[in-house]
Length: 364
Image 1 (cartoon, helix red, strand yellow):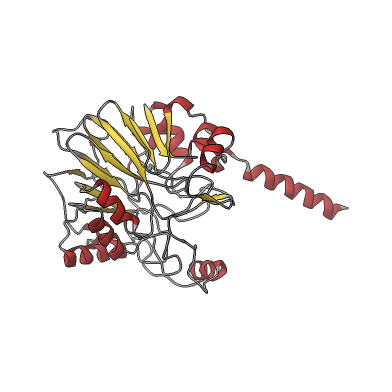
Image 2: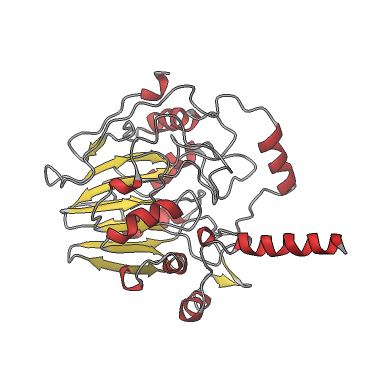
């Protein structure tokens, strides 16, 4: 009888935990109906354009977990604080040229066409539902706090993973944001967290929205997956094409390499700058994240004039050394003669005027 009571208490505790707000909420109602009518919705879930297994054939989830937890992986985090430049977060651009400020991982601020656009902000110590679980932010990457962002014009969320849709950061930033643009379904999480429905714009692939009369955002395919609890691919994952009268940027989010980059390049290119992931890769999950050499090829496929590699420099979510992604992408870009920009954390890139290429990750 005591055993049954303990099991019952544990079951109730489990139900309570998995329904905490941090996990968000799955789409329902009209939002779910719209998702189910998408061309890439099959078998109860959203699908990639190409077959995309989580692991290659012959590799089990438990093998991946064992390698991550029990094998030795040296240099996964820097042994001292990374260099950081304190940026002007809330000021307007000093010229007509777009400005980009990277905060580590896939979080960056774009100042363009008189607007301030924040992408995938994560300023928590860990990219997980609980602060005691997961990789800790590298030393020196916690200089900027979420509450410092005031009156952002547009907040872009590419997908609902914890390292892109950060609960604590959203609670502090979103109430002052004028418009939120995200992938279809993600609005369900945001609404549960108290974000006003009228401020949320959800896009399916190849759907566009024009905001403030002069900035167009188009959601385009990526090769990835979504989910904050157990059920995957109930919300969409996207990259975004950002277009103004004088500039066009590609905001990559997370994506494995595939033919979609060339298709996007043909339809929307060329791009003045492509911000693409180049970290958190491994041979155990080769289809959902790019290796650095693939990142360079993706930028070429997109017809990007300049590549800015992100998704590294803050968390260790894979087994490679923390600075291996940038070392490899620098070599690959040089071999392909692709211009690369590698700012320090917090450093302001000015497109066409200031494109830093210092190798600061070698200074440790």
